[in-house]
Amino acid sequence: MIKRVLRAMFHTDKPTYFEIRLSDSGSFVLRTPTPEACAWAEKFLAEPLPNGERLVSGAIVAAIAADAIECGYLVRFL
Image 1 (cartoon, rainbow, N blue to C red):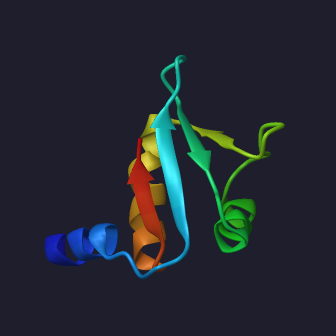
Image 2: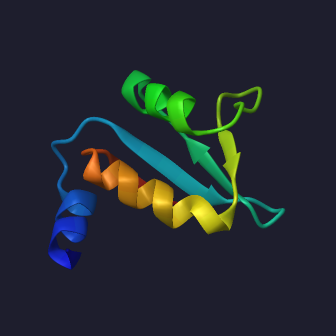
């Protein structure tokens, strides 16, 4: 399992990914830079912010990352 997660995180030929960064308020901001990632976020997450990013709580960041990696998305933590 660990090898699969590490391989998915560092394998670079996958075009779709998420960027997750910590906000000043202690929650996380999820950025979806491709249409595929945006469609995934539309399906599973709440309304986007005006710039298209989404606020997510720390409780679900690991679940988002794990599910995204399983679906073949790259996830980058900033």
